[in-house]
Amino acid sequence: MSPLQAMERSYATLKRMLREGRYAPGARLEANRLAEELGVSMTPVRDVLQRLVGEHLVEASAGEGFHVPRLSEAGLRDLYEWHSALVLMAVRTARNPLVIDEPDDETIAGRTALLFERIGEMAPNREIRLAISSVGDRLHPFRFIESEVLEPIIGELDELSVFDSALPQAIRRYHLRRMKAVAELIRRREAI
Image (cartoon, helix red, strand yellow):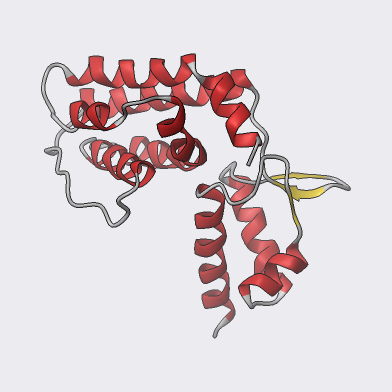
């Protein structure tokens, strides 16, 4: 395997693990252990960790190494607010139809990620699409917990799947509901 292949495979695997919430908030991510687990040398793992720092999925601090970010209630609320604003921008500037396809991942978290990705694709602005994806990656571990805290979620996703005049209100309700539950979402996420 070439160094580039090792890095890209390591990146995809570690990013998926972080999105799935496999590591608790604040958990230290040791390059040597990750390299062993991923079956690659430490060099691509260090490069991947630096890349993930740039994506805000990992934090680095001098003397402390790499670790999973720990969000405060205000920080998580800000992420939901920012995601809401981005998704609403995508809807307001939509030039493409909303196309919902069958998800590869049938979990609520997977369906939610795919739905917001497809809403983002309606926007002609690449930066809006990238920002929706980036914030979605950071929110993804919480999407696994949302179904435990916010029942029922299936109806919400159905409301968000219809591109009509009610969509902006549905987007706002979706995010406000989560913003009200940030304390419980953080508590459950940290209990993992």
